[in-house]
Amino acid sequence: MADIIQLLPDHVANQIAAGEVVQRPSSVVKELLENAIDAQSTSIKLIVKDAGKTLIQVIDDGKGMSTTDARLSFERHATSKIRTAEDLFQLNTKGFRGEALASIAAIAHVELKTKQEQDEVGSSIIIEGSEVVEQEVVVTPVGTSISVKNLFFNIPARRNFLKSNQVELRHIIDEFHRVALAHPNITFEMYHNGSEMFQLPESNYRQRIVNIFGSKTNEKLVPVEEDTEVLKISGFVGKPQFAKKSRGEQFFFVNNRFIKSAYLNHAITSAFEGLLKDGAHASYFLNLKVNPKTIDINIHPTKTEIKFDDEQTLYAILRASVKHSLGQFNIAPVLDFERDSNLDTPYGFKDKNANSPSIEVNRNFNPFQEEKATASRTQMSYKKEVAGNWEGLYVGLESKGTKSQQDFSEIQFESDEQTVSMFQNEHAIGQQQSTFQLHNKYIISKIKSGMLVIDQHRAHQRILYEDFLKNITVKEAMSQQLLFPLALHFSPQHMTIINQIKEDLEHTGFVFANLTNESLEITGVPVSVPESEVSIILEQLINDIENEVPDSNFSATDLLTKSMSKSLAIKTGQSLTIQEQEYMVNKLFACKEPNVSPNHRPTFVTMTLDELDRKFL
Ligand code: ADP
Ligand code: MG
Image (tube, rainbow, N blue to C red):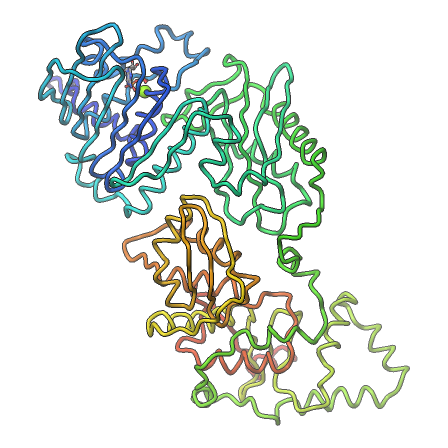
């Protein structure tokens, strides 16, 4: 048989390699920014159009390239950064594979302009799909400018695979943050579709963090410094009381390179143990310096994971120094007058009185009151005849006097706490009661065929969700004016998100004023939203939008309503008065889709008498 193996032509090999290096526009951003840093630039400008799908341009004032190097830089495995395999173990540069420019040029239209200081003129090269289209001598400033246009123009499948501009832009901003945080001594600018997104002058590390994440960040930072033989640590962790539900602000840099490490992240989490609210994540901005010989960066093509020789020691040092800093700066449980302390209390410790604050009773009060009429459609009876049997049972117990009450308490297998709160709720048992709350989690309600067990949190989510949706689509939400405007601070990135959803938020009843690129004022809130929860709601919302894995039918309105209902819904652990329980049941069955939560989880289950009877067989 004839020989069949052939060498792939370069442009095909490059396209294949490109798949590994360039997953999306942000990969290009990362490679170009890193090249600019390796070229010892002091000022770097990133210009992006349509989230990088149309244009990504990086302009630097670094050392530039000679005409020959300019042409060579697009060859695969062409690099000025390493010469021998040994160099791999003492890397001081970001790049070393010599693959990025070749890969990018294989799948986009690339234009390079570059000049070295000692040269009179510079060179310009245009490459499209690995083909050099034009090369000429040009007048251009010292440094390098690379424009990457029409990414994936020759791989439609990859182009179609790209996510919405919002998502792709977020990835780009993430890369930009990582590089900018690793190099506070370099000036960075970023523009998207002609408007400035970041302007980061050369500064110290703290200032760089503040310039990126907003001026409010400053007071949240606790410095961490440690200098040992194997590891130097410098940077900041966020004070626990400012911890957010999002994982957003977690940065490790090892020798100025952003890395991800679940193991080291765990070291921080354990240093914060006991200081964070449920579900909150520590934020950190930490620079680790280790001997380059003790790490291997070569294991991942995009190089965000690295291997350490002695991870356990690093873990121990990191954990200890973060703990030390938190202790030294007196971070352990503090009084913080800026926050509503109720929000910080884990639900399990919340006031367990049967009488909830009246605001809870009224939180859903709104003009859509047709539920009474609709509830009858559901053929369930919430009338007063319901609790007859239970009443009989309890009355019987009481009449037997103290002794049997003792017996009764002896056969409680549940913890005392639960027993007590159960009876707290039962104060109205003598009245005709149609609902009953179990473990501050479920509402039990009698129906003809047996009983309903309603998940209070999910049910309330459904109720609020439909209310908000109605408000947004009808566009006539009730707003409640605030006596004093509420000033809130966000990072510029989060303000961008708020601007995108502002109109929808207004339809729910929010009224905004004085928006800047890192703050806003709220002068009105939806009637169902307590003022004290506004900032939590917005934070949760931004987090949800950032973490949404958006697909083509991504709807901001839906996300907004889901997020708000999740934030506001009565939580598991909250005890409800009988009125509240009944209100919840009625309101739930007045919903269009009472049986599932906004996230399509069941809101209630039924248990028929038959099923119960069978258990007693
Ligand atoms: P690597 O960065 O791994 O060396 P690249 O494909 O990213 O590979 O770049 C190839 C070479 O092109 C680099 O080694 C460097 O010499 C040169 N180069 C790339 N970008 C720049 C730039 N902005 N300024 C100066 N030289 C650059
Ligand atoms: Mg490179």
